[in-house]
Amino acid sequence: LLLEGGNQTSTFEFLLWGLSDQAQQQHILFLLFLWMYAVTVAGNLLIVLAIGTDTHLHTPMYFFLASLSCTDIFFTSTTVPKALVNIQTQSTSISYAGCLAQLYFFLTFGDMDIFLLAVMAYDRYVAICHPLHYMMIMSLRRCAVLVAACWTLTSLVAMTHTFLISQLSFCSKIIPDFFCDLGPLMKVSCFDTQVNELVLLFLGGTVILIPFMLVLVSYIQIVSAILRAPSAQGRRKAFSTCGSHLVVVALFFGTVIRAYLCPSSSSSSSVEEDTAAAVMYTVVTPLLNPFIYSLRNKDMKAAVVRLLKGRVSFSQGQGQ
Image 1 (cartoon, helix red, strand yellow):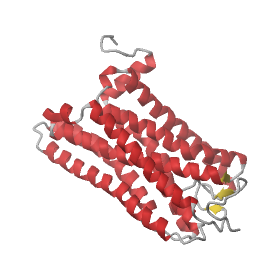
Image 2 (cartoon, rainbow, N blue to C red):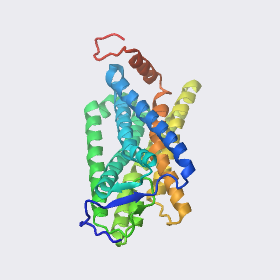
Image 3 (cartoon, rainbow, N blue to C red):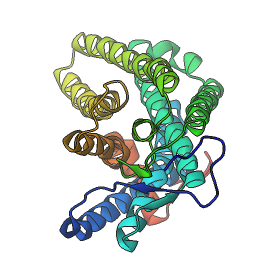
Image 4 (cartoon, rainbow, N blue to C red):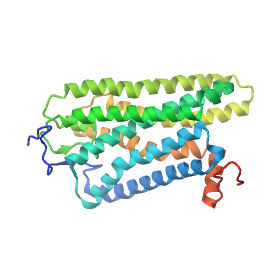
């Protein structure tokens, strides 16, 4: 098989390796991923609705949290439903156009997750280290412009990668992953992927490492400020919150860096490791975000309870 980039027929289909090649594991994996997907969508949707309907939460921090929750819903919806359908129908096929579309949206929402985690860390840094200037620095208008700029940038990056992949020729139909991603697609190409790899290293390094460094610097400054706080109870509470945030950040960035900036071989054990890493940042992190960022937050919990009880405040004048 030789499929020329730019001359693909509409009937061409890739075959996805899937989550496991063990037939007896398929039913368990289907139920597990269906449960994780349902919890992820429900949890993140609950956050978006709670923040949107409660005027007390119309602040920069919750605006970014709602944006992260929306992104996580789209991010996990790009890959998991297709994987579930493939398991249930015993079919591993995905059309060429569907594969490129999945790649584009996956990269867009994945990069947006990275940017939002960095922006949220910076927001917490300003709130804790420069509280008197917080509303001036993080005005709602500036926050909206910041998120819009992130969306634009992530779309351009995803478009660049997707265009370069579309120019490749493919010698194999079998993609060694459960969704269409840059690394697996480059592995099955019989075209020279040096340009793709250089662009991935440059753009990927920029998109992943700069936000990661921003998160680290922000949290170092936050921890430094917390240590200077006079209240021991306040320090414990702040460390508990920051600690849980850092767990999610470390899990997400660690697996993303492993997947995109550390080249792997094409051996079956390496494929399994790559798939495990992909599951961590595509399924597990979006599942954890609602719990980490919301359930440890009293205001957020109160808003969720009000939403579930049907008592929401759409305007400042309304009571609860």
